[in-house]
Amino acid sequence: MRPEEAVRDVEFIKTLVAGTRRTSGEVAPWLLLWGIIWIVGFSLPLAGVKGAALGRAWMWLDLAGAAGSFLIGWRRGGPIPYVWKGILWSWAVLLAAALAAQAALPRVVRPDLLVRPDGLVYAVIWVLLPGLAYLQAGFFAGRDLALLGAWLITVAAAGLALPFPWSHALYAVAGGGGMLAAALLLRREGR
Image (cartoon, rainbow, N blue to C red; front, top):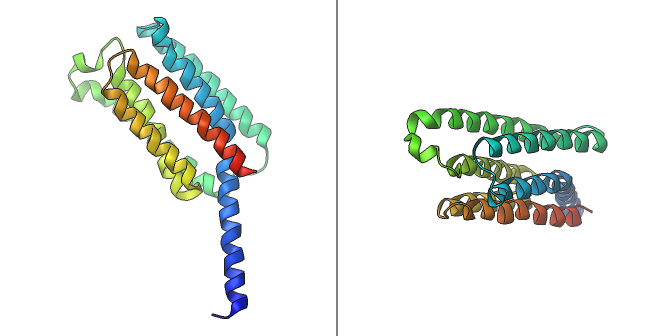
């Protein structure tokens, strides 16, 4: 290899690394939004919200998150970066799998393990799903997202060992707080 080819290859690698950082940094607004939603939603049981009321609260939080996500994307403008098109499709598959698992769980697992005042099994699914999604996204869009995914998977597993309401406190602080911390770090790195 000639020196000028080596220099060209190094410049190309620098461009790829910069693009990956920029792509990861573009996720920061969504992480901020969903980190706040997780902190609020998973803190509700600590305030005494349980059962159907908790389910309704999460429904409204999820709808607000979906609307906020749409607005962030709309304000961002421009085309979706190529790498995120594939990631979003794979996330849709993960979401469908999680919904199928949630529907199938009552047929596979003893109902007394699922129908608990804390809804822990369902909570674990919805902490584990984003963990898997960010871990997968990290393979394409940067190490930082993979680390966030691994963190959320760890938080989901740790929550299984805690009694109610401490499991939800962990999901609020470590899960939602982890998203906020990742958003701030990615935003700083993406600039």
